[in-house]
Structure formats: C-alpha cells, structure tokens
Length: 277
Length: 302
Image 1 (cartoon, rainbow over the protein chains, first blue to last red):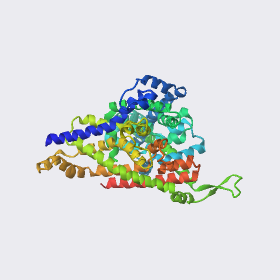
Image 2: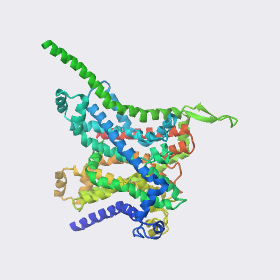
Image 3: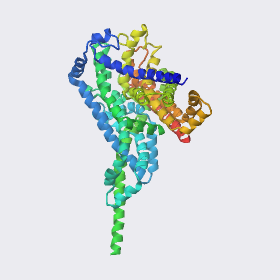
Image 4: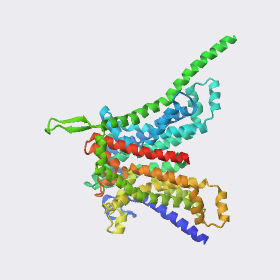
C-alpha cells in the first residue's frame, strides 16, 4: 500500500518535471539543427550538428545586432537593478529609522504605488515621453523601471528586522555622520535585503517587454526580448529567422538558468518575503 | 567650561538636526523624484489627455481639431465591443487557467510535502525552472511547439491546430501555466513546511491517511496562501499582454485587441487615438488598483 502511493507520488512528479523541462530541452535540440533539419527531423533527435554555425549566424545577422541587444539587456537589467535597489533600500531604511513630518502619509503614497500595475503605466509613459521628446531613447526604458514601490515596503520591513537602532546610535556617538552610518554600518546588515531586491528587479527588468515595445523604434536600443520578437515577426516571410530566434532564445536563456542554480537561496528568500505581502 | 560644553552641544545638536534632515532628503529624495516622474506624472497626463478628442472639422480638410469631451472617451471605451470583449477573453482565460494553476501547484506542493517524494530538491528546481525564462522567450518557445512543420507535438498528434480561434485560449493558458506553476508550488510548499509537525502527527494517530491529511488538515491550514495566490493570479491575468502578443504573429485566433492591454496598445499605435488609449489605460489601472487594494485589505484582516 505504502510503496504503491510512493510510486504514484514519484510518477506524478516525474511527469510534471517532464512538462516543465521538455520544452527547454527541445530548444537545446532545435538550436543544434540546420534549417532543413529543423523541419525534417523529429523534435527530440539530433540532425546534423550545426550549433556553432547557428550561433555564428545569430551573431552575424544585422551587423552583430544580437550582441548589441545582449549588452542592452545587461545594461537595462544589471545597471538598472543595481541603481534601483540602492535607491529602494535607502528609502526603506529612512522610512524605518528616521522620523519626519508627514512620513506615514508619504509611505501611504508608496503603498498606493504598489497597487498600480506596471503594464497600466506603459502607454501613459509613452504618451508623456513622446510629448517630452524622450521617446526612443535609452533613458525611456532605463528610468521608468528604477521605481519599485514594493521594494521600498520590503526594505522598510527588512531594515526593522536586520538593523538594530542601538548599533546606529553607537556609530553616531563615535562621530560617524548619517551617510557614513548608512554606508558602513547599516548597508552591510542590509546586504541580504539588497540582494533580494536586486534579483527581484533584475528579473522584472530582464522580462520587461511592454515598455520597450512602446518606447523603442531604434533596433540598436532593443533589449534581447524585443529583438527576438522582432526577428520572429520576420519568420513568416523568411523562415531562416525561425532558426535565428531559436538559437538566440537559447543563448539568452542559458545565463539566466545558470545564475538561478547558483542563487536559488536568495530567490526563495525573495519569494517568501513577497508572499507575505 | 561647563557652559561652553553645553553651548557646543546645543549647537552640535542643531547641526545634527540639519544634517539629519539633509540625510533623509538624500535617502528618500531619489525615490520620490522618480516616483513622481514615472508613475504620478504619466498617469496624470493620461487622465488629462483622456478628456480630449480629435474631431475632424466639418469639411473633412483643414485638419483635425482637439476638443474637450469630458468623460466622453471613457464612455466610448466602455461602449466599445473590442474593449469589453477583451474582458470576456480574460474571464474565459481565468475560468480555464485558475483551477488548473491552483489545483496543479497545490497537488505538486502536497506531493513534495507528503514525505513520499524522492529527490525533493531536484523536483523543486525542475518545476521552478520555466519561471526563470522571460515571458517573451517562453512565448517564442511555445510558439514553435505549436507551429506545424516545426512542432514535435503537432507531428505526434497529426492534425492538431493549437493556434486556431477555438484552441488559442488554451494555448495561451498553457504557456502561463508552464511559467507560473512552479512559482506557486514553491509558495505553497513553504507554507506547508511551516505547519507544525505535531498537527500532522496527531491526525495520523487518529488514523487519517496521507490523502486525508492533505485534504482535511494541510489544505485548510494554508488556505491563506491559496486565496492570496488566487487573487494575485487574477490581477496578473487582467494585465495579460506578452504571450498573446507573441502568438499574434502566427495565430488567426488572436485579434489586435484580444486583451484590454492589447486594446490600449492598439488604440495608441494602431488607431492613433490618444484620448481613448489614455482612457483605456486609466480604466485598467483603476480596476487593477481596486482589486489589489481588496487583496491587501483581505490579507491584513487575516
């Protein structure tokens, strides 16, 4: 009886894991095939091994625009998340450790900001950006994602948990200024919070599609997701773009999966913190 | 001697207060400046734009004229079949997606928590993995898995057409399920792990089997997590945009105004109707905000 349910449980888990992993492994198979093989051979079998040639065509298409997209994604998501997390943690820390007139009203505004979904501001942002001439610039995609109201809420909670007020008082009576206290005493204690918020923001920006789609015309400013989407659109007329999209997708997913395997711990910390919300 | 100390201290305190104020400004200033610039200002500008409409002057030439129409754009948007049909699509999507998602994620979490599963950590990582894949890429992978000629699934099933009008809703649901089931599973699993062992042990002593314990003890104890994820899933569904937009390239079943967000995008870029694009965005933001507010209120009450 018990071994039967053990078998049933594990069979179900294996089937579910096949559901989540097979599409990814199909991508791996498909990226190794030449275009004729992509159509002619079964999905989960190797054809002629063509991966390197495929990677080369991806890198060569449009004068190396793919690498440009890659760099853009790294800039938007990497630099964006680093800056945004710093702004966010500093703000949450101030909400936790300082008092000023109207503080809770301002915090109420932050919480209202949490309620507004980012997709609902994309079209309004575009309308404003086209009025101010910022549309189709690097900044039109970089700046809007720096704001992360939920992160401020999270940082305030985590600052209350991680940074004891007495330590700050001790630093101050040793003569450290407010900035110094934040940078060298509070920040090291807030590092786990910073990393958690950074990962949150990094994935959110890396995944962002709606905003770059409305803001950008210039291919040279595209992030990876928008670039691959644009290639796919050409696939109907020129099938070779299907091959480029498949190999390009693989190249853009692999670093994320590797990073995930190394950073699993922080991922979970962030998610369970998020679900407390 | 004493007086000078007191005096310097007083002066130092005054200086401290100023320095403190400066520090607060430095800490919260950047966030609020950006908050005003990228959330408040665009929404306010969209509200402003939504009150005007372009009316072509009677003769048809001489250009269009911008006139104040009050809430006219909102009424037009609410009366537009394309907009309201988008909500019907979302409704159908939720009816299909939510039971599959919640039932699936909950089952998987219970299986992992049952004490019968082997390689628990491997399965957690494997099930979560699609969530790492960006939405566009997930859409593209599945696009090929649906595309006749390339798809191994279509090869296997023969005549299946995942992208026609009848099946495309299921095709989109499947992509979302693939992306999110592991995420929700982890949330439930974390909640299950927090149940005290004595509670489960007591039920076992009373003679309850694994399935009975899952149904009558564990699920009621993580009800909070389940309800929260259901509500967040609804709010997320309301914003559906990326996956159908990707499939739109190859599917006849998806029109350019398929979901409310696609409608707003299409009004701005397809029809160049700025007033209605603004109105649709504001309506959607309001609806999502009200729903999120209800969720948060509910969460706090718990």
